[in-house]
Each structure stands twice: as C-alpha cells, then as structure tokens.
Length: 570
Figure (cartoon, rainbow, N blue to C red):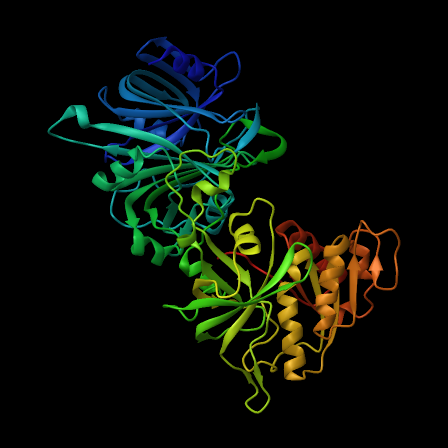
C-alpha cells in the first residue's frame, strides 16, 4: 500500500467498507470518527486498523459479528472536499462488533487510485446523532431468492442520492489469487440510480470510467451486489443487497432508453436506518460533478410521463428551412420521410451521433459533458400538427419545426447553427409528449382560460399551442407571461404575436423602463396574485428547471386551479 494511500485513509473522517455475510451476500457501510479518533489507521504498509461506532443494526457490523478471519473486505476512501479517492482491498485478520463498536485488523493486497469524476463535493462536519432509528431490517430474515420491495420513503431516498457505494465480489474456488472483493463509488445527478419494478430493483446506468470494469466484471461472474446509499442532509443510510446482472445494448435500452450498459440489482434484503451518519452538511449545499450526464429514466417511468416515443423505426428528417428568431435562436423546419403523430407541444428526438467521431476519453476538463454525450437530442416541436375542422382532430404530418437556441459551447446546437444548410439529413428516432392542453378529442377538455408561463426559449411549446388554437378556431382566453432579456426576449414576444397571441407580457430585468407590455424586472409572486381571474385560469409552465419549480410554487400559492409543468425527462 503506497504511503500516500495509507496517509490519505488515516486522515479521513469517513471510509466506505464492504464485506460479505455468511450467505456470501455483499454489504457495505460507512465507518466514521472525529478528528482525534479517525476510523482508519495505518499499522504498516500492508495493514490497517478500523475502529468506529456504528448503529447496532448496521448490517456490516452483523457480518463482522459472524465472520471468520479469512473474510474478504474492500474499502474506498473519498475526500468529498476535493474529489480525491483511492481503493483498497484484502483479508480480515480479526474483527469484533460489540454494542455498536466495530474493531477490525485488516491486511491489504490491492490498492488503486481513481479519478475524480462523478463525485459530489460537500463539506461535512462531524456531529453525532443521539438516537439512530431502524425503520426496516430484513438482514436476519432467511436468505432466499425472494425479492424485497422498498417503501415509498426508501425509493425517495434513492432518488435523492447523488452518491452511493457498490460492493461486489468474485469467488474462484480453484484459485485463491483470483478471489477478491471490490467496493466502488457511483455518483451522478440526484436520482441517477432508478428504482423500478414496484420498488424491487435498483438500476444503475454505466458512465464512462477507467475501463478496469472491476464491479461489472465481478457482477458478470458472481451475480451479486450490495449498496449503501447515504443521505448527507438527513444522515439516513439505506443498505441493500441482492442478485445483480449487467444488461448490454438492446437489453439495456429497452429497460432504460438511451443507455447501452446498466447494472440491475434485484433487492433481496435491506436495512434502513435514520440518523445513522454522524455528520452535518455545512451550509446544506452540495456541488455536483461537471461530468455528470443527464438523468436517464426507466422506460416505465417515461411511459407514465407520456414520454413514450411514437413513430419508431427508420425515419429521416431533411432540413427544409431555417428562420432566424433572434440572434441566437432559430426555427429549423424539417421534412420527414414518414409522417408522425404528436400533440401540440410534443417533442422530437434526433440522433446526431453519426456526425461526431468521439473516441473513448477518460477525462475532458475543457468539456466534461462530452465524455458521456450520445449526441441524441430532444427538442420541443414548436409547430402544431395540421388540424382537420371536418374531423375535429389533429392529423399526422410530414413537416415539423423545432425552435432551437444556440448554447455557447453546446456541441449539437453549435453544429446546427453554424454547419448545416438546406438538405441536411438527420435520423429522427420518434416523437411523443403529453405537455399539452389538447387531449383526445383535441377540444374536449381545452380550458376556456389559460395562463402560459415561459422562461426564455421555454416558450417553444406555447408557439405550438398558439398555432393549434388558431388552426382549430378554439374559443379560448390566453395570457402569456414570458421571462426574457433584451433582444432575445423581444424576439420571442414577436414570435408569439405572429401566431396570433395578443396578451403577452414580457418580464425583462434588463429593460430600462416598463411599458404596457414590458415589465422592467424579474417575474415575481405578486404578478400571479395580480391576475384577477387566476382561480379560473389553468396554468402551463415551461423553462429552466429552477424557473419551473419557482413559478409552479407561486402559481399554487396564488390560487391557480391547476399547474402543468413540462418535463425534460427523455
């Protein structure tokens, strides 16, 4: 074990560690300690001592209480203040777990440094919790192949997490040198691990890593894995173990669209302990890794959100026209090889991967998002499908328009805005979406009064709504609140008015003075309260996530009868 590794472990107030129980099931936990009693200390270049107080129901402690001196163990030290991490593994020499006190003497035979990708930065202050409470514990239940379902609270716990640790092992009865255990950090945007199948499975999409594939390899051969999922805000810990499998290519994509490799863990035992971690999160703030890819959702989750793609199969979009909306926003009109069906406000999914030659890259500090970019893009269709007054329905169409903003440094948006011209062709993977006031039949439940609230280019579904209102000759009263700045905001207002919308209010904090249609400040709560008939207006909100969250809260406080928020889940 390198000296820098042993010093690193010895100075950490927390350390993730894993072993197996008497049934061979992997379990992991976090050992902790104050500054004058760190949980891990280096005895020599190949020996570590662990001493830590754990909750009495901690499953790792239960494993230790029944283990023998040849048990496998693995650990990983992560410094959450600077994203440094190192792994270590070996054998247990001696161990005890009495009244919540864990003591272990360990030998090490495997050490490795890791990159800082996907690690959430957080400032943790040691602060023991007085009374950890066990909410669920199936550790001592008979070990069977039966699945164990997570409760709603436990599912929410997983979906809040941006950090977890995955334990795996490989047992080779013919070669002790090939027998080992592994513990790895997994991180991403909160919710990167998805719970599926009525709470019985955990699904982990695989992100670009170091290509050592230790966890994936162990799971491929031994088909078991354990997880410990911490919440550093509440101090709660969820411990899981179960059967595991890796899904590749089409099998992975069917379960989680746009993912070609994932690990699926079927939960067979769990322990959930509240206030188990003796830390406070200073400031309550966590800094996510710039390498985190966008969230990927299970196909079942997307279907529940109306995000199932229609028109799957071979379809090609040919660029027919580009219309400049503002200096950095343009409307791209495509002719399609095959007609598609969608509701006004729906989305289209394009695959640009053939236009980018991206080799494997471990790190890319200049553009971290590029490491996991699949070059598939989803944009709102800002045009409405044609409406048949005779049939009273929207018809399939072979022409769609997407109004797209040029994002500085954006790989695909830069390509579209600067490199393509009429005749450019790109595969269209499909269309979908349910963010729309138009149901089936389209005018059956169309609200008589609506308030559309847009943040910047989030106005795109409302352009489609407005076209649909005009085409269907629907009798509706619509007010639009648009939050935008400068020429971009004014350009988007003009785009709305070209569709026939007359009651458009622009909130522009850069405007020099307010006018009848421009408010020279940010949108605020009292603007919604000032809408006299708001209790009769159904609200639709689209824009950046923070904008939608804030305005949705304000609309509910102001008394809107319903608030519909766009989802960018696909």
